[in-house]
Image (cartoon, rainbow, N blue to C red; front, side, top):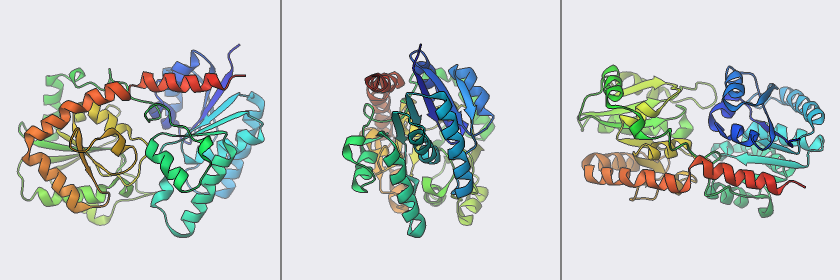
Length: 383
């Protein structure tokens, strides 16, 4: 009989997208149950990962009463299922899942850290989030930062002891499917059709951003920088691929106005398949303030794009400055503009960055490498 592992995320899209393929791989070795709030992706998880799922509502906002109810429901479920590992992802699922797992007597409680939203918070809210983070780690038996930079940040903040921290492989929560993220998978006719739909012409230089359109991703700086250089440079476009979030971390009104008024800024919203958009682009611009280990940067590199990223953990581990991209300081519009201008004015260098991008991913971040490392960790916990 297979041992049981329960994987918990706050929302189901994390199970469906961020951990895609991994749960199915683990189900060959263990009985795997996925737990999250309800969403349309629940059915997708069951279908694509071939695992059982269970819905327990959790909110991403701070809500003591709702959180208490969620924790109690998790406790009851874990007490009934008796898994030998509970493995959580995302901040709220981590806090509630680790607490409930400890109270339920689960022997192995693992939490993956894929970024620290609290780093961009100040004042009383920051103090509260620091306490919550420490509670999460205190209830875990093992904490997996998904980058070495993140591990260092956690140690520097004294959130937990060094012996509880471990990075899987060279970083990343799930690695990348390099067969899927392969430029040759997107034919020329598909690219041409998409360019026509978007009003992009041959010879246009396409900067692309993929992700949530929120302040913490550096979108205010990106839009402002592009708006400035688009007044000087012809035949350039900025392609924004991702959902506009208006609740937790909205963009400034000034940014929204520029997105609306600059005809060279193209927004396409959330896309199930980002590969065609990466395939028609020249460079990824990812000026995020904080990350764990960014999938988007790995995806862009696998699709042979030069990258501009910020000097933050994860990004500065995938990108080597002046080898497969450029590294700039976060929140620095001048550096961002200069980096974008550099790629425009040095096409040979841009091509050189793109040439080095994919081999690095193939060597270090293929998803099978990450899965095997995690499986070995699980196996080591069997007694």
